[in-house]
Every structure is written in structure tokens, then in C-alpha cells.
Amino acid sequence: MGEELKRIVGIAIPLIIICIISGAALTASYDLTKGRIEAVEQQRINESLSIIFPGASFTETDDYYSATVSGEEIGYAFIAEGKGYSGTIKTMVGMYKNGTISGVNIISQSETPGLGTRIAEPDFTNQFSGKRIEDVRLRGDGGVIDAITGATISSHAITDIVRERAEVVMNETR
Amino acid sequence: MKLDELTKGVFKQNPIFYLMLGLCPVLAVSTRVDNALGMGLCVFFVLVGSNVIISIFKHRIPSQVRIPCFIVVIASFVTIVDLLMHGYAPELHERLGIYLPLIVVNCIILGRAEAFASRKSVFHSFLDGVGMSIGFMLGIVGIAICREALSTGKIAIFDCTIVPTFTQSPSVMMTLPPGAFLTIGIIMALINYKNIRKEGR
Amino acid sequence: MENLLVIAVGAIFVNNFVLSRFLGLCPFFGVSRKTSGAIGMGLAVIIVMTCASAITWPIYTYLLSTFNIEFMEIVTFILVIATFVQLVEMVIRKYQPDLYGVLGIYLPLITTNCAVMGVALLNVEEGYSFIGSVVDGFSAGIGFTLALLLMSGIRERLEFANVPKSFQDLPIAFVSAALLALAFMAFSGMRL
Image 1 (cartoon, helix red, strand yellow):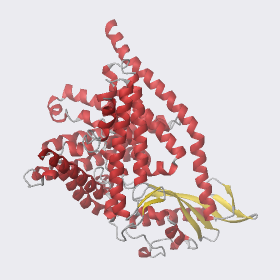
Image 2: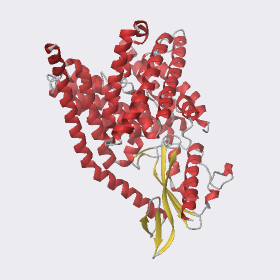
Image 3: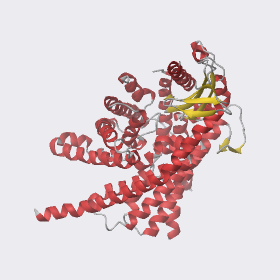
Image 4: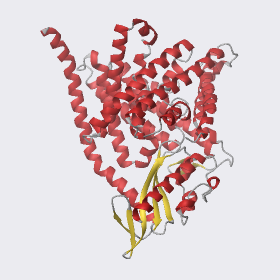
């Protein structure tokens, strides 16, 4: 029994040591990169905010950012997330107080390159600006947004994501 | 002799076309040349790193638990690459998505650890890792060049155009899954064709 | 509560693991020469993927998220999966020698099958519940088996076809896979 135990311990200890070293190395690299990762993400959000409400300043609340220009609140910016064709689409949406979209900027997406990825291009996202929430649907569904040829699913997903989230924020702020 | 350890991975035992290893990321990520380059670099780092570490500790690892030990070492390297990419190349990190953590189950890496690094010296393992990852990179970038050129009609790496638009009617299918299978199938057939002709002579 | 049917149909057809996500390609080309081998491999993958989803979900939810160490995900998942596969192999060998005869040679291959690791990572990414994850794992396994069976059927017939010499075996298998993937693309039009 003693021999057997010794054998098992002899096998197990190197594995345990490797696991401990690996855990330590990972924690160290996590701590090193953590600040950087958060900064990059914050920077990305700030960029999006300044695209959809140029020149405004923002105060963060629980659920959305309130955009003010010279002391007066003009609208809200919020992040909308949902499932696209392949993976999650995350987008920043700006909305004026009267329920018109001021702008849409895609933060991250992993759609098919060359097809679905075109939802992130200004040609597509600019269509949202100045549209009322209820009109943010594809033309085939009674809305005013033109789908991207060959990427109907991605186009459909992004309009749904934007509209549904905008409706929620509209009700909250009313 | 030493040069041989380096070059065998590039040509004679190219991991993609001859050993048929690590196909999943090759097909999934080769939609664009810059994605392929990014994936190639990640594999380079993980393969060279784990090859070196494993060959350093090869005598201290009991053979009964060698596979779990290799896996922990490889997974640690993959996590480090993942964290670094997230911090310093967020866009690429986003595009590689799930295929970045999946390097851990890439058969090339565990295969090299088991077949090579656990037996040979540190320096040889290093050379083997470098050669194999260059071979991998050549394969994945080669496929990506074919697919990007045929699916978009041009080649651009990080928004910098390498080959200007040469056709106005590219085939979108090449960026989708069928295009991936077709490209690699045809490339392998071409390699076979070349080998058959060589033998015939 | 997510719709389980949507998850199942999505994993089997729309985002078929092999033909649309490119996961598990090594066994897909490695053991698709004969239909009998494909069935054994498929069964083993279904079992392991379902159980791996069931095991990794509580580990991620109750261990990694609770202690804010999500970055240990890769190391933990691969170790758990590798250990689990070994365990299954030992149990089956001891209590079900007949089944072991069918599955035995395929089980070790599964540890480095990216489909298993992939389903665990995807469950986390999609934020599925426990039931959702298990259904996703099971359906993804079914989808894998379906693709494997179709492929082995095609390859068995290809043996009798007059394939150009340089296309023999693997190249023609890839071209067939391309056509199969093209057929599966039809499902991507489904709006779930």
C-alpha cells in the first residue's frame, strides 16, 4: 500500500506543479493585460459615442449614456447586442429625445467577411440616421432600411437589435 | 542536418497538406489574408513556446501523465496569446473569435509535443516548432490568398491594398464554407499532380 | 427561456459544426472512408459532446464566474474534457466490452477534436442555460454524425468511380465536402 501510494504521488506531483506554475503565469498575464483590455474597450465606446453624437458630452447611467450639448440633454446613447448570422453583433445606437435615431455605429461583429461585415460600413449604417424607431425595419418588412445584397440575415438582425433596444430605452426614459 | 529540422516542416512534412493536421482553423480563418496571417502568428508563438518548454522539462514529466501536462502547457500559451491579442489587437481578436482559443486542440501542436519535443533536444525542438509553424503559415496564407482574391476581386492586408481590383464580378461563394473545401481540395490535387509527375520521370 | 427547438435545428442544420463552422474536420476526413467507422465515431462524439456540455456549464457558471477567473476557461475546459474522455474510456472498457470494441479506437481521438472544445466555448459565448447547453451539445453531435454519415456514403461510392489520379482519395473528398457544404447552405436562409 505504501509503495502504491508513493507511486501515485510521484506521478501526481509533477502535474500539480505544472498546474500551479501555469495558474500563476496566467494570473500574472491577466493582471498585466487587464488594464489594457479595459482601456481599449472604453476607447472603442468613446469613439462610437463621438460618431453618433458629435461634439456632445456624455454622462453614464445604469442602462444608457445621456448626451448633452451645452448643458441641455439632446438624446441617449446605448449599446444594443444580439445574435447575427454568425456570432454576436454589438452596436452603439444614438437616439434623440423624440425617438429618432441619430446614428448607429457597430462596435463588434463576426459576420461573413465581404458579405455580412458590410453592415459595419457607413453606406449601410448611415441609413439609420434620422429614422423613427418604428421605421427601423427592412423594406420587405414595411420599414425604410435597404438590406445588403447577399446578407439579408445580417441586415435583418441588425435592424431588429437596434429597434428592440431603442424601444426599451424609449419606455425607460419617458 | 539542423537545417533539415527547419525545412522539413515547410515542405516535406507540411502540416496542412501532408500531415493533414490542424485543418479546422485553416478553413475557418482563411477568408481573408490578414486573418490568416494573424492566426499563423498565434500558432507560431504557441507552437514554438510549448515545444521549447516541453523539451526542457521532458525528463521531469512522468510518462503516465505526459498528455495532461502537455495540454496544460499548451493551454497556458494559448490563454496568454488570447489575452495579449485582446489587449493589443482587439479587432483581429474579434475576427478570429472562437478559433483563437481552439488553437489548444489543434492537432499540430499536441502532435509535435508528443512526437518531437518530448524526445529531442531543446534546440532541435525549437527549430522543429519554427519550421512547422512557417509551414502552417504558408499553407493558411496560401489558401487565404486564393479565397480573398476570388471572393472580393482584390487582396488587401489591414486596409492596405496589395493587389488592386482585377474583376468586377467576384464569386462570393469562395468566402463561404464551400469555397474553403474547394480551394484546399484543388491545392492538394495540384500537389499530388506534381508528385505523380515527378515519380513518373 | 430560450427555445430548445431553435437551438437544436440551429446546431444540426443551420450552423452544422462540420460544414459551416469547420469544427471536427480531422475525424471528418479521417474516419469517413467506411460507413461502419462513421457510425462508431458519430456515437462516441454524441456521447462526449453532450456530457462535455453538461460538465463544463456548471464549472463555468459556479466556479469560473463566481471567482472572476473567466480567463482560466481554456485551461480548465480542455483538462476537464481530456479527463472525462479518459474516464469514459476506462468505464466502457470495464463494464461494456462490446461497446468498447465499437467505440474504443475513436475515444482517444476525441480529446483533440475541436468540436468538443468548440461546443463548450460556444455555449459560454451564447449564454445558454444548463438545459440549453446540453441540448446544444447533443444536437451538435447529431449534426456532426449526420455530416459524417453523408460523407462516408459519398466516399464509399467514390471508390468505384473513375477519379483522376491526382484527385484520388483526399482531394476528391474535399471537393465532395464543398458540394455537401453548398447543399447545407440552403438551411442558412431559415429565419429562426
